[in-house]
Amino acid sequence: MRIDVVTIFPEYLEPLNVSLVGKARARGQLLVEVHNLRDWTHDRHNTVDDTPYGGGPGMVMKPDPWGEALDRVEARGRADERTATADPVLVVPAPSGRPFTQALAVELSEKPWLVFAPARYEGIDRRVIDEYAGRWEVHEVSIGDYVLAGGEAAVLVITEAVARLLPGVLGNAESHRDDSFAPGAMADLLEGPVYTKPPEWRGRGIPEVLLSGHHGRIARWRRDEAFRRTAAHRPDLIERCDPAALDKHDRAV
Ligand SMILES: O=C(OCc1ccccc1)c1cn[nH]c1
Image (cartoon, rainbow, N blue to C red; front, side, top):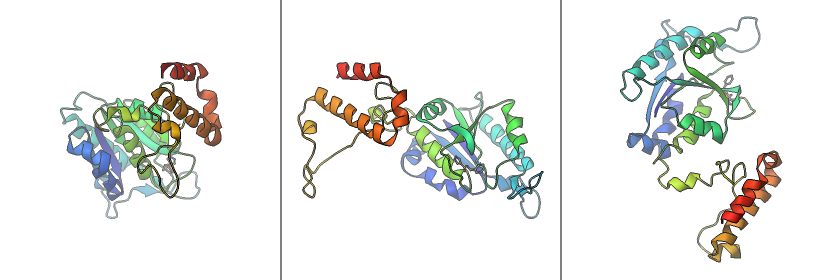
């Protein structure tokens, strides 16, 4: 997968050089290019924003630097044999976007090329989205119902959720099977509690069932704990889970 990010704060994306994403890049599973939007401004002050038409507070990101940047990013991607024939998917983080979910992370993880356009200020001139929506797949994506000063933090969140799903990136391929929100019987249930050694810590032991070696009982206990935590923290998810699938889970274990 190729990821391009256009931003006025390239240093904000440094974390993409470490940990899971950093390793995937080192292994060549992921190519990440970060571009400075100001490279496509031509005035003395490298201006990227201006006052909003119609008045109102704050500033809006000008369309011209974004147009030049995205066109160059597309040209550079086309010169890369891994994305020469692919079409970029433009991802624009915004509070007004489609909620980012594990399902969307899975959908994006199957794309060959993502281009992120994190906005600052009040957002990017709408004509930029309209221009690229004509020939690229465009997703405006919200990582939550709050307002950030810029979309860069959302790019880090989305990139991490997507990169860990790329084949071979997580190492133990199983470990995202029982993720919260992973498809399958545990779909849409929050994960239950986890424990590891030592067997006793500050007078606290381990739930007996986990030491029993009885995989069926362990799976059912985990399912019940996941159900309990979900009912407590996210009752909205309970409606979405399918009792038949849960029974199937129980019968299967
Ligand atoms: O604040 C966010 O993105 C930055 C942004 C984009 C457009 C206008 C204002 C701010 C955001 C919140 N949830 N998901 C994304």
